[in-house]
Image 1 (cartoon, each protein chain N blue to C red):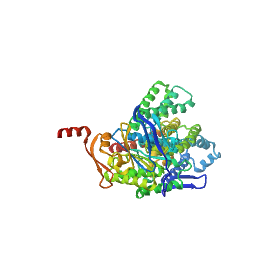
Image 2 (spheres, chains in turn green, brown; image 1 turned 120 degrees about the vertical axis):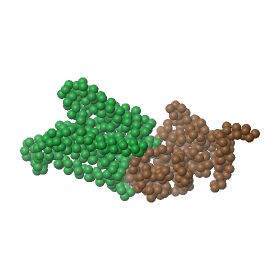
Image 3 (cartoon, each protein chain N blue to C red; image 1 turned 90 degrees about the vertical axis):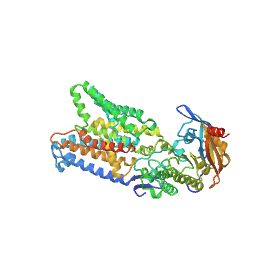
Length: 348
Length: 277
């Protein structure tokens, strides 16, 4: 098939891989863009550095202040943006395929909200910060299970999951608000900044947490991706093709929640990246199915690093949390898509 | 799957299937003839689609068992079943924008693994399925933009690409207009003739079942009422007992197979007769 790149070895053990050309091109372009923005981001800021200074600082030469700016302030933050953006995007792609609904994303159906409640509870109640990530995962999982039980069972209408998800998201918002009224002012302020979604103050431990999470969950996604494609055809068709539907769906659910929850831990519940990146990938690559996941990940990385650089610079010398920017960009698109879907009778 | 397909046996033994504890198929024993087209017919809610789900391991038996190739189907690894038995469910869903050739390619899933995503056999099987179903010209088109008949051909192509000796189809002609119904049934007939695939098909239309099937299984209330060659078993008495309809049965002027012409529902037919007398 001419629109796919096929890598094949016919001798035993026979090996073959296939990726859509569209997805490949989008992946390459988004990766190139991300690298370019990384380069721009390291050099720009309140304290501009020339490319030569940046290179010198990266290899540990030159001015110590430069090294501090590059190694302690900018690189971990930029890398966090890349990894968080990619993780949100993959999570969004999984949930959109799993629910067969392009309006679904972990932030929209309350999974980020569930993670937030748990994380804020740990922050406000003065728990150890090592507990935030596991708590966020459990919170996200509880929200996902709630949505699943209320909406997914029996394969009911595809708009139902969005509506129930929005309800669950509202509940989690109420939970967060309640916790904020209970906390000490200092912790509440810290939690509030985190809740908007910000990469401010991201350190190497955040990069490490994200990288470790992705190192486990991206290969898992890759292994589950073909099953995900089959599930899109409906449970009966997937089962007929030899997919263990319940087990595959549960595994994908855990991976999707894991990616979203750890991202929320690092950067707060940043909105709409998970929602938009898979859309852009499908549109640009003119493809559907799990083949777009790598491209979606790269686009997510690109979007978040771009948003963070803009958020840092837009009202110089102050900065706005990146989460506000992504919502400003994402919400209109979501509403447009929602309006279009409603007009066509929810048939998407 | 060129030339003759190897025979693989499919049978149920005292099979009971239930939804939410309510038995739909009751103590049903049935052997599907190899290399033949078997049609499951019966009134709504008689259990024919449920039986098909049971035969294709989608529904776990409440009692009894289904055997594929002599092995209990629910104990066999689902991937191994999927290379012997293909299924076209009643209302499969299709992602927006998925092309025909990608849909057909998904039929290769049971033959693949994460490190063997697209072998030469996969490619050949997809080409063959597209040709057999006459969908080569549609290969680049999005499935959700096709007409009902074209879409059904694409789905059958996907089931074909799975290259299973047995194919089960749940009402593949429902929602299609007459021309597309004939198109789909002719295609299945041809597949059976040319490749010797065993086909089990749930059909609504008794005349179409009588015309296309070698073997007819008529069900009512979860049990087999009548079973055999259409020419032998389609009678006025059978139509009355299975469907509760008074009818005349005469040879189909085109094929010579039995043709049923309904007169009235059985009770009403009685009253009509009574009035006449």
